[in-house]
Length: 81
Image (cartoon, rainbow, N blue to C red):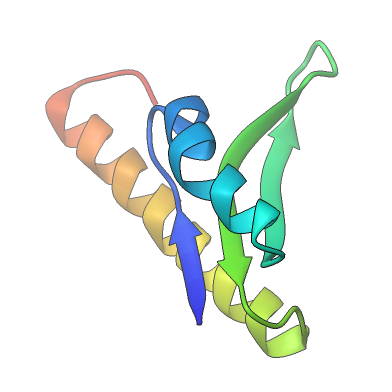
């Protein structure tokens, strides 16, 4: 089982979804980037039953697809990306 989560309001989702899964001892993969001011910015979470290479590949592919969809949606709407 793998759950990938990418959204505009990750802090709300991390409290509601990710934290309980982590406390239930599921593996959690945090994916993010560094801002120009050297602060870590979360892009998405991957929660899985088993943390292995296949799970990492799947999580990164799904987060990439989700980020591309958000960028495309915002570009079409004329919003900042």
